[in-house]
Length: 304
Ligand SMILES: [Zn+2]
Image 1 (cartoon, rainbow, N blue to C red):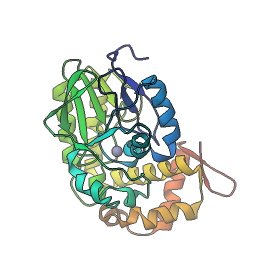
Image 2 (image 1 turned 135 degrees about the horizontal axis):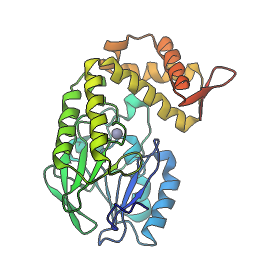
Image 3 (image 1 turned 45 degrees about the vertical axis):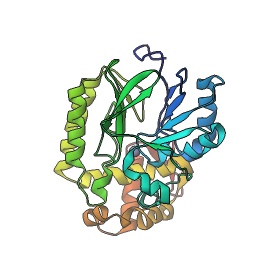
């Protein structure tokens, strides 16, 4: 599909509710990197079956454990009996299934419980599709995220650290922790690697890496200048994510999501106060204005 990708890699491009699934089907150890959101599990299973062409999946590797990247883990493990390899940072949280530390509580997103078999070594290597990939730290969007780098082919699996047009919400800042400087450092690391191809967590793989890095560097400076921008972005993103799943949300639904989940985050409350109803109305209006959703006759938000 993308002639700039090595033949050993298939990218199942999924959208925003589910992350992309990156498949190494013909390898000795058939592997998928990231598994999408739980409500898309059936489609993930079917798409992966097609990609694997009858071979069983032997291994799942997660770049990070956000619900849209690890939501298919449990289902695929049931089907294939495959091993699950995760970044090291949240291994205890997975063992205890601590939904607070795993971010599912604060975002009110679902993820079926899974257990892990192995952890990645940051700074170490993992073999994927018959080649060695470096496991690199990718703090910023998520303190425990990793990227996978194939120096031989110049291919970077960037997760949510670099997209064609931006990167993921800087979640640590919402919890009142540092994230902008870390995201900056991650972008600097990518610049040094100078990848030929980037396979992002969302959106199509791309080769216009310098352009994407230019956009991302400008964006992180813009966010760091005024942290409210990151929060605004997060509120919009999290409501839009929920809307993709539910298809329709009225003011009460948006208000509840903001009040019971998002406003429990220290960084958010400190920046925007705690008037959930006003925030809900503003986010709904913004999503409609930028065309990410429409408002129906009853004033409810409807997915496009
Ligand atoms: Zn993420």
